[in-house]
Image 1 (cartoon, rainbow, N blue to C red):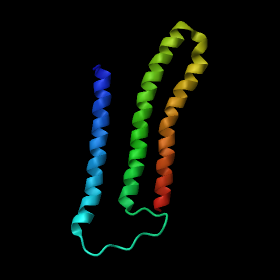
Image 2: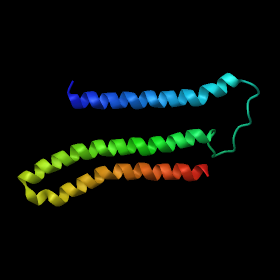
Image 3: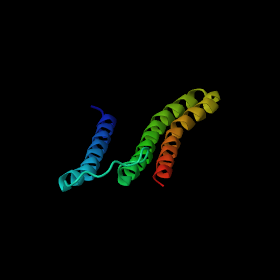
Image 4: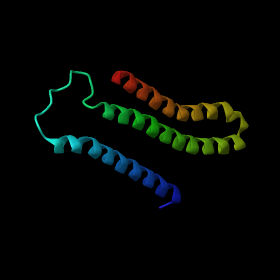
Length: 118
């Protein structure tokens, strides 16, 4: 396994453990408390606001991580292509911009989630 693959695997495993831990921390105390079940929330609203904030944070953080990963790979390939054929500069800038757009999409999704929470 190459060093890059090891780092990517470690980051993926870390985010999976983080997401599982957050889910357990949010759901287990409510289940352990027991008692009478609460009335269901109105349609369209999240059950817990904390889950909405967690979703917004994950949308922003993971999209920024993915954008960084994509820009690293596309950018290095773009530099290699530009050194061989300088006329490809405009096309390569578009490809790097598309990779950076991933972070913008995640930020837009998190803004939509936060607006839904109120």
